[in-house]
Each structure stands twice: as structure tokens, then as C-alpha cells.
Image (cartoon, rainbow, N blue to C red):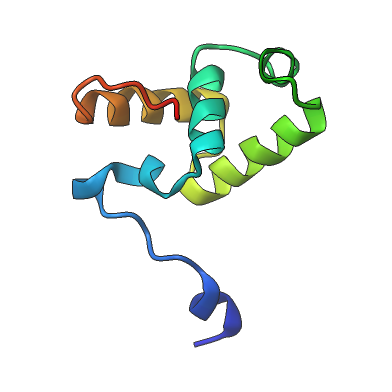
Length: 91
């Protein structure tokens, strides 16, 4: 087992919230806005962040969830949001 394997967090259990469960509250908030179709620039303006900060958050969300596109993230948010009884994933 190498260092990357020892430091990589365990995959979230789908029974306890799916792949979005491992995200920080800010990453979940940004994921929802991306799923709504907002660009990085629009997310940045809405949350008073720099576009580069949003890019970093989106990249971490992709890595943590294993998705590679905004469309795949939108699908994941819709699916996991429905699995949580329709509760908002923001904050």
C-alpha cells in the first residue's frame, strides 16, 4: 500500500448519502449551483468568490465524486438529492 492509498479517504457509503456525502458544505453548495446550470463565473458572483476559487472547488468535487463533466455532476446531484427525500443539498 503506497502513501496515496493510505491517505485517500474511504468512499462514502451510498446508504448514508451517496457520493455527495464526502463533500464539504461549500462543495455541496457549489455542486447544486453547477447542477442548476450556472457557469463558474455566475457561481462566483452569486457566492462572492473569485472564479478561480470556484474552479478549484469544482475540480475537487469532480475528484471526490468521480464525475468528469458538469452534466454528470448535475445527474449525481439530482439522484442524491432525491435519495435524501428531496432535502436541499445546500449547507
